[in-house]
Image (cartoon, rainbow, N blue to C red; front, side, top):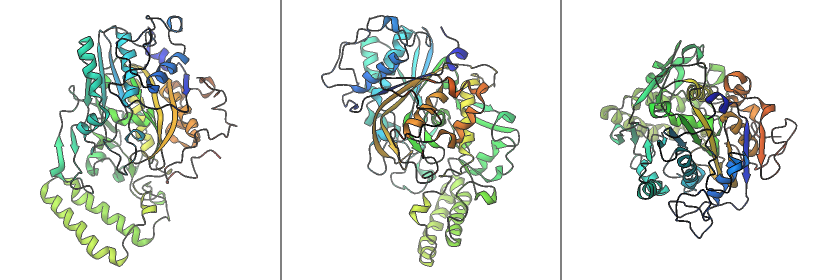
Length: 504
């Protein structure tokens, strides 16, 4: 069994590409081939390319290669041992695509999760726990997500055939039903959830946080309108995150993110995906109010005219004054304020150009806050123990399988355009996998602060660009060469990043 230190220091990354790769549509997403190591007797007729691609990505890393194509093949045997608790952390985000696009340009496909589950179970020899857990966006209807993905069909298969209890958790403590009021987070639409059965762990990174020393913390903005709560947990040497205890108690965490762009940090992959380990996302600083000349990163200087800026400030004032209070009276006052604005301010020219408004809320390359939050969470996931203490050595074994069969470009992460890629990328070091994926997307990783920071702190994140080895079924040998200007899958960035992050 490899130690956590040995695993994170392994910089091998596999890239499996098949241009016609597609997801299966038949739950529980069993393979079309009865592989020698396969646990069940339920293969399907239609090709399950996703399962086959995950299997090949693991093989490309030479995992247990001596036993490949035998019933004894156990690719995770040096990562997972019997009786371990293994958390599989997908990227769920939303239960629907608001622009009527492909849900699986947003969320990890259950077929990829199914293949990972099977190989985890083989490594456990049926002894231990497999937990699929994530904290999606606050307005994600988790029941609807389960219905659309048919994820519970995998759970049912394991219970029926192996009498094994696969666990699936929504780590949030509430969800916001926007169905009847899509524009506002009214208190009447907030519904309590059970959340993480083990609860949350309060982690204070203190002076080790990338927010320590940031002077303009009173302008911080979180995920859920109440800025006072965000600021309470991020000022001076108080730099707190409320993280899932199920995740921090795990022996192994397998990250299974989606290959897509992101409006605040450039890309959504492993590092940014760790937001889904937090049980209260309002502890997470998303951006800082104001423009760079005002020590903020909400939007660039000189992009909005005077009337547009006044309208944005009035909107934020209404959030702070009313919506953040989360009670019926202030909800009503907010509603009145919004109606007043639509009735009287819009006719006077206090309206926003949609193409420019998409940059508001830190949705651009100048966001200097969200990347700090993402790197803080990476440090927590690697070095914080189950009781919330920051340690000097890695606390858990980790692995990554990236779902890039279908990716998401342009307005990611919530309403991206679908991008057919036919990719599965796998590896041990989350940063190494993210660097490879970023170049496959066609972006410059040096322009992504959360990735460039990890490269500049190799001892902390066990990452060295020159030591990353790529194993592919096609030639990706010079993928990370600084002189390589290939755009590979040529993703279109979010509008706030276009022209900045693209390889030129």
